[in-house]
Amino acid sequence: MSGNSFQNKTKINSQTLIALQDILLEYILSNKWEDYEDFARELSERIIGKSPKTEKDLLQCVKSFSHPFYCFNEVDKNRFVNRLPLKKIIKRLSNLPIQEKLTQPPEIVVISEKPKIELPPFTPSQILPEIETVTIAEAKQLIAKINLPERIIQDELRDALREKGATNITERKSDTSLEVADLEDFSLKIGRKWYSFTSVVKGYNSLPKKLVRWEDIAHQVTKAYQGTKPDYILLVLAKDLVDGVISQFVEYGKTVGKRNLIILIEPINLARFLHARKIL
Image 1 (cartoon, rainbow, N blue to C red):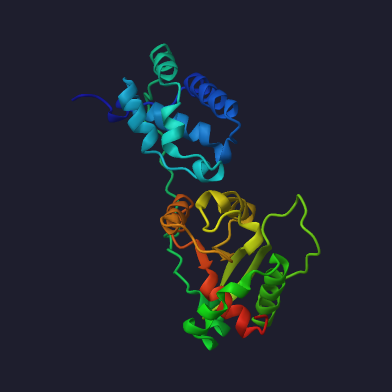
Image 2 (image 1 turned 120 degrees about the horizontal axis):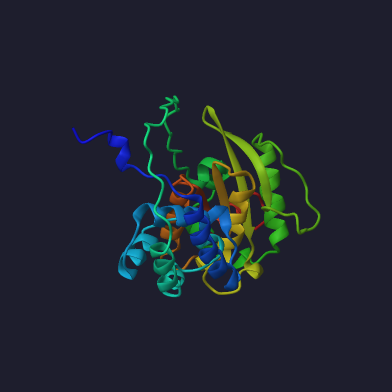
């Protein structure tokens, strides 16, 4: 007999974790990034678990680790990895004490968990049915007119949601530093179920370029999700997206366990909504 199988398992030594986390935090803070949702600790635990022996192994370990840190700080993963102090991390790992062995099997606690249910995708017309009263052809003729103050779009969206029985819809006279999203934490019944939302509205003049990049909206989207962790974020944009941003929406949604997190109201559907509401 080879002995108890639990002898081959290790637990993370606190000294090991702290040493590696210190290196990562120093690197993160030196680049003026935020250690969003315990990124340094979680990455440290992953590295320790993989025990890379070479810089190549360490690179692969970090590259395969997904986390909303990258979206929140608007930093490309390749840029983060390429500047990582690899030699310092490998050296620190090689000079750490041997990890403590588990000589007794841990107590097994069975916890009954509810199966994770994937939230369904919703179309803009399921949220704002009045969109269906305006054709796409009509909306295309109105696109040039959606150069409206952002506040007008926000207020019209509030009124429409009130009419549909949404909860927690309040007026806001001005933006403040406490703002989490443009419409914070409301719930709306779709079909037979209630779902929670926050909404981010970006008017024409608040978007810096002709086409919208993920970098232009990432901070506000991630901040809106961080606030109350809703089922969905209703993202209303007065300009079109560059190629690839939809994929980034899905990727961010996956990092928080909600692939269909972002429901986009792009310029065509925004024009349909505003025309149906007699704003255009």
